[in-house]
Amino acid sequence: MAKDKKTLTTAFGIPVPDDQNSLTAGERGPVLMQDVHLLEKLGHFDRERIPERVVHAKGAGAGGYFEVTADVTKYTKAKFLSEIGKRTEVFVRFSTVGGEKGSPDAARDPRGFAMKFYTEEGNYDLVGNNTPVFFIRDPLKFPDFIHTQKRHPATNCKDPEMFWDFLSLTPESIHQVTILFSDRGTPATFRNMNGYSSHTYKWYNAKGEYFWVQYHFKTDQGIKNLTREEAGKISGQDPDHATRDLFEAIKRGDYPSWTLEMQILTPEQAKDFRWDILDITKVWPHGEVPPIKIGKMVLNRNPVNYFAEVEQAAFSPGNLVPGIAASPDKMLQARLFSYHDTHIHRLGPNYHLLPVNAPKHAPENSYQRDGLMRFDANGADGPNYWPNSFGGPEPDPAAGEPPFELSGPARRSPYTHPNDDFVQAGNLYRKAMNDQDRKNLIGNIVDHLGGAQKRLQLRQTALFFKADPDYGRRVAEGLGLELAEVERLAGMTQEERAKATS
Ligand code: NDP
Image (cartoon, rainbow, N blue to C red; front, side):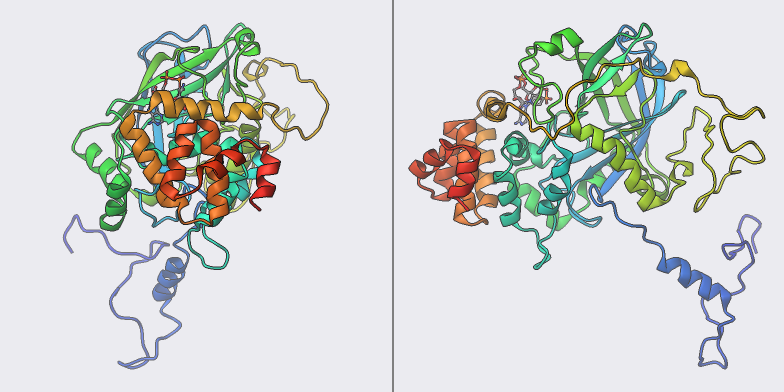
């Protein structure tokens, strides 16, 4: 054997004499149980797939860095943001949401935009989307919403009936539905889209003063989208087009980058703000809260092995470093639980030890022990409880978020401003979109909503009409609905409308 060649071994390092012919009794078989190499090989193959992510199953990822470009120390004491020019290693995963692991990258769907910053204070994860808002704002609705985006329980097909039934009964979705059905719902590539925190987070500085913030990662490649026709064609020709595009761009040295802009509000400004800053179905208008450029993210490293880095990557909005905290946004609060929970299910209780998930620039010093696949020293012979007097790691009170006030009765409260739900969707249609955007939006909606029953078409079109009468009228025209009926439904309360179209 040549010097640089390696000997094939079993998983336990035992040399394998033959990997082409199973061990048989006689030349023509049967196969012997004592071919342990064959048994090990098949047994491992049978277990190659881990549970698919229930959402965001199809994705692509890359490594790179984040660099600070402005002084933000008056807003946050996070060390990775502490000086201009400071760089932090990142790993980023982009994804579609509703489809399975083999589904087309060009599907009409929000795109996940999940970032992991390997900071010296532990890993900070920002798990965003390419849209600044979301369909719902109470986590109790999340599993139901996702069911409607997936497959019908009987046909196992994507189903416009359940899709529009749910959304038309959930009017707060109108803003996100309008973005989803614009051409931004089919980004040309992962490089040509923005990433948003969508949620409001809290930053606090060394003095303990806090601020409400939203993150906008603006693509330096420019926004580019696919039309419905282009997306349909690409889905058939190359379902992995965006995955391939990201990998090839990085491979040829054309590193994609994003400029981080922050919207920042003081608690006093937030009190009098026109919009509920914790409502994820709303944006903070740029005119009222001008975004400030504070950093740049560059992706310059392809994964060496997709499964090791991208499939096993696990992000959680709960991974927050000192200087950054959660807001009371109800959706965010539920995500703080749900992401970690789903990773334990998908990857096991020790998923934090996998190289892509392990902190790279801060030691892990916890008292967590044992569990499936504990593949490090498991705390060795150190104490596995706290408090102890044997030199184990100690909590650092300075790492805590400053105390904050909470009050009010414990009860299940709906959001109290339902009429606001239509204003920003209308602004998007009237103000941000041009004629071509509006034309494509209407065409995309008519194409999809046309697959639902007429009563659902009417109920949903009434919501478009409430956002903007021209928007509703054009969808009604496209679907061949009677405008008077749409207008009548738009004039009703949500309860009356649901009843009239049930
Ligand atoms: P601005 O005119 O200041 O902002 C409009 C923003 O809309 C743009 O900056 C761009 O966001 C985004 N936009 C432009 N075209 C489209 C499109 N076809 N589909 C989706 N988004 C688009 O006005 P406002 O801040 O008052 O916002 C008006 C509307 O714009 C909002 O109601 C909201 O729907 C939408 N929007 C607002 C954002 C915000 O944070 N204020 C962010 C994204 C959308 P970007 O620069 O992020 O690409």
